Length: 329
Ligand code: TXA
Ligand code: MG
Image 1 (cartoon, rainbow, N blue to C red):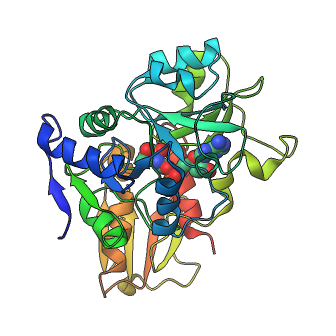
Image 2: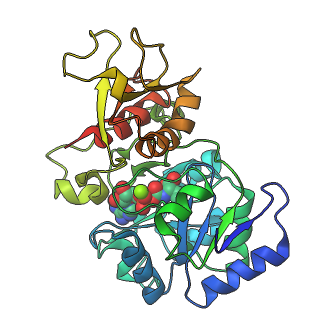
């Protein structure tokens, strides 16, 4: 694979990190691993570098990006942090939690990052390679998931190369990711904490820390659709249809032929499929969901994918969100 460079997760070679950082400093794109999914990174303070991300992904211009930092204090010149935001950073960073905060007046964040909003999404990933890269670049990195827009997010370097091999100047390959679904995104700009996207950090864990439940944005949050622009689009979808199976329901009322379908889930299905991938926990289901989608779409035996509907607790809420949106027509 061209421009894919292997790097040790726990002991990243400083020479490789330096090379990747200089690509970023020159305005190039570097795909890198995080604990959630692989990201496609650019210098987050440089408009023309950030524009390359949108072009590479085919991403709608009105869907803002997350800025990645290597320490909480680096966010001080970019975002307005409340006491509550600082407490959340201290408790959950580095880790799969993204905070949406008011953009600081006079910050150098280009409008391409925020899609023109007055807020900015920030996160500190829990991955030694990501942290070393951000530090060596000396800039926050704008980084969406490193897939073509609408496709399943990449959980290994091969999936990145498949979607973006032509566009990334360099792909850092540190093997498979830990979580497999993106970070949890919460909005801290108002009184209530809003859950914009369920993700790697369970909503219950955040609520328990805050001592109050998270609110899901509703019609009264205006402009409603602006709250989480990414949520408007079909997402995470392989090239073949995804159908949802709730194990409480009978299988195949919907006319699925199991002999021509793949199955992913936690329960052994009552009939036999062309392919099936059964995970032993919701966490491993999360880790393997997107890779299973990619595997089955390229397996000629599967014309459809049936995905089991998991329970809504823990990582299950994020799994449900991704499966539901992959299945949306
Ligand atoms: O785990 C992750 O978060 C991965 C890794 C690479 O860090 N990144 C990721 O980025 O998932 P992306 O671009 O695929 O998703 C970012 C989400 C989108 O739903 C976007 O709409 C939302 O964050 N977002 C970004 N900035 C926002 C803002 N200012 N207000 C509301 N939502 C925002
Ligand atoms: Mg994405």
